[in-house]
Length: 253
Image (cartoon, rainbow, N blue to C red):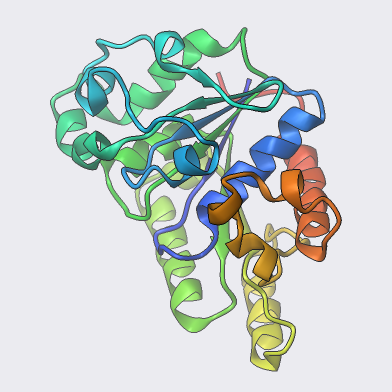
């Protein structure tokens, strides 16, 4: 089972859209796929038309009193399941502090699902926190959507420094990718070139700024499900192929 975190310190960079669309493409390609909505805003849960409620809330998860198998919900799409988020997740950091080995709780919870799923996507809230450290411990690959603009790139730099300073960089593969790219803004090209030089692991395929993506909230569907032929869908297909090549067949034990 491969675990892919989709994470950014900064909000509004297309993180949840990427998690949902990549998970949909993984399932459509035949992979048994789970997306875990860790964000208290529960946007991935909303997109996939699942009720945003976890029995026992974040407290039962953080303290190890819940079996993830009992909380997983089917979506409208074959091979794509969801562990829904809800507003109780806002207190996850406080709850994790009381758990044994608090930075390893997510990985411990996910291990029993290894025989059921080929890939798990973690849709993460935008913060540096105990929950995000759990994601860093659990993930085989961390995808970091980055808008080619000053503030978004600054948070990417902050993340890379944090991972290095706290030792996470030794085991975690980090793959930034560009999101919300506007071809009518030449300044973005220079930013993308500088980031790619600084971080050679940056993925080649980028997601464009597209009106079709805004309609995910209207249709409550992954983009390829309602707009299979559009540049943004093609970009996600190409990005997913690149992610597949990165994760390979194995996962961290």
